[in-house]
Image (cartoon, rainbow, N blue to C red; front, side, top):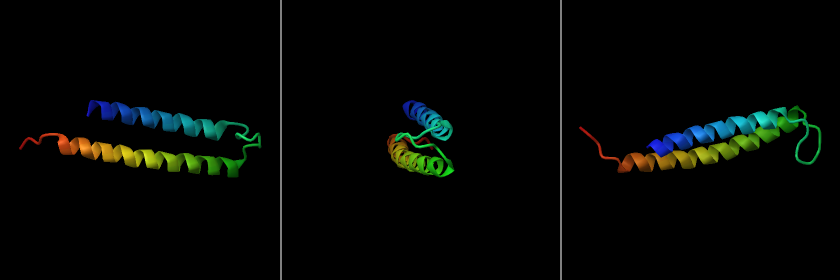
Length: 72
């Protein structure tokens, strides 16, 4: 569980740093000016990627909890 918690914090920090980078950059990868529409598209793609990673992370969490012995 400790590794899972560290991994959760790491992914959260990576997500926030990536979102801030995408929001504050002046030009996108092709060199076009980064207007509001480009920012929204970039952040949407970033968010979708994060959701996929989050789902995998939650499956991992569920499998860890299933293996852990329960105390009654």
